[in-house]
Length: 425
Image 1 (cartoon, rainbow, N blue to C red):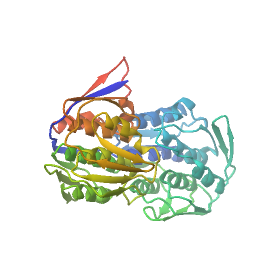
Image 2: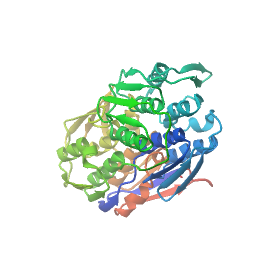
Image 3: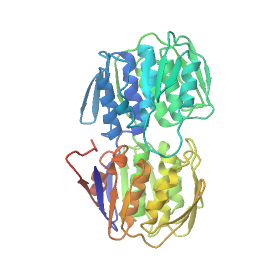
Image 4: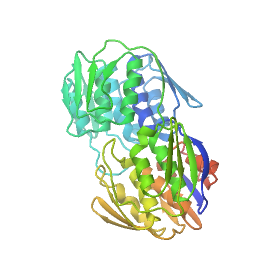
């Protein structure tokens, strides 16, 4: 177990290079199963979830190597279709193994995936997708046993533009017979990155980034080399850290289009924003202004993964802000922890009313999920005195050495490791 000790009240300034995207690398790691060949993946973030996915791949027979920010996976030695239950329980993204395992083996046994408790995230859509392509599924004692004699392309109509269901539909269709069309597909940049990776592998996919994706089935895939896109949520979080401390930062390796809606909200709060081809500059005002309305929506709307950070940001803004969460119903459970630091937030169902205060005070707080944990770090950076953030393991699931990045920008944050094993990497 680890905890962060944060000394607040220091303006962050400087330059940071943004790492590869967590939400892009995990489905791509799962996809390496399908080619039975060598996969070289660059710009990979060193995250707890990435390490867990590599443990799963090792456990089912693949050979993996992670050096620097490059992962090499040889999936040829795959030797089982049973995914270890203890590893699946550690992260939600293990659901991405369903499609690749069925494509490669025609069979997979997987327990229900774990992850952050931010509200119901049923895999009903994933199951519906698999069944439509010819997969039979038995559910028993928390296990899913899926098998197929033949995957056959079809029209898939998603009830909701789910990122995970869209990606699993792509993965399971690559080696299916015929053509698959995914309608009402999610449009996130990470889906485009998955399409690009699979196409380099020999798949024939088009339409990612739009509401309709077309996949022409292939019989064989080849070795591949690919670089992961920058992490737009990491970028947004560091920009928020600068904004909440009244600082000034330049982020390199950012695709501005991917963070356009978030940048617009920073502008509304009074920040100066400048975009470059591969970077974003932010300078905060003396005091942030409240934002009348933030509403989370599927991409290209405001991302639910930035909502918690803006709770902290608006807590010290001048005026009152209203934040509506439409994706995950339990995203506001971090509010009780923020209240310990002096934040004034009232929650009514899926709506949070945030009244800005003049200052926050350091406290001992507990991260309850990944993005909520990041929000507590932001609040600690702005607070008077010291803040201790417990349960850093949640934060490590999505941020590659967050404390190192903050210290490089002049902040004061240190990690205390409790016990003999640091769970961060």
